[in-house]
Image (cartoon, rainbow, N blue to C red; front, side, top):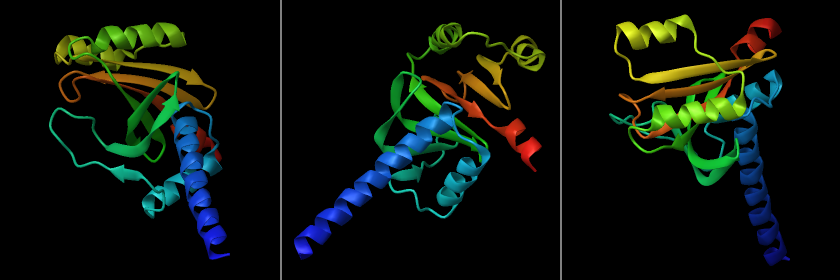
Length: 171
């Protein structure tokens, strides 16, 4: 009997981890609603998402990085790292060859379709010599975001979802 109970607990913990990975994948793919985001972020704030840990800041690394024990399957790729930009925005960190991040991001943008950069981003690149791209695509009250910053996060492209507009209408 005790053995059965132990097996049930182990299976339950594993199922929870799989559910959390699915939630993270759905977060970065713009597939959650406001209630699901609030619930998940509440669990992150309370440190009750097993295997999801904030990473210390490093120069030339993914900013606001969180690591999972198992890979997150999203956008047709997988990664153990996300950037939790805010409680309303999470981006999957996808490795890219250093120096080739912008070309890789353009390929992703073409694959997704309908992505563009705002005038502010273009101005940053032209006037402040910023080396990166920040493509966005509105999807209802959500926004797909594809970000590269070759100075701050070399070797990475960040692809995910911003839910800011969804929350500005739900309050």
